[in-house]
Length: 152
Image 1 (cartoon, rainbow, N blue to C red):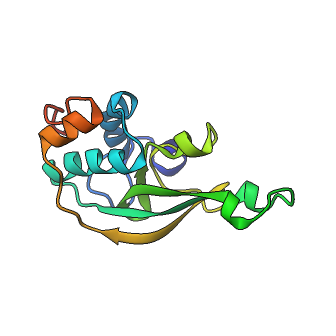
Image 2: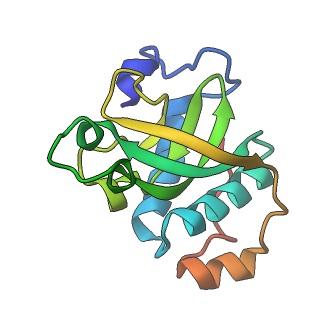
Image 3: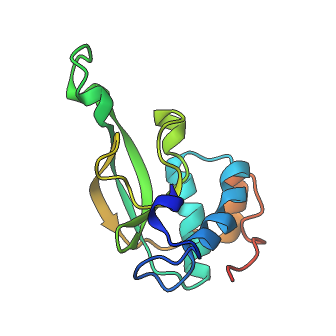
């Protein structure tokens, strides 16, 4: 995960903040928020927006290349799922719900997808969306999103 892509201090090439700290800030929310990938994308987008962290929401397919190469799998359509994630720039993404659909071997967190890895992000939509209100996200996620501490 991030140990492969960050220096010992957690500095990311090009990003103006420490990726390991961003991961640590979001990880507890990923454990308590009762939402799937689209909801988690909106929850994290709200927090990033509130903290002035540039990002883009992306939606498309998360493809399991292992299944794609497996001759016993019926079709390419059986190898991927519709999925949402966030893009930070410099190839970094935030995805805390890939494992929900693809199992424990899928990447998780703030990361650069492994180009030679098993999972591939195939975006169909990218954009900036109006952040949902804190109370709406609190209700949806069943978590205190509006009271989440600021990123430092």
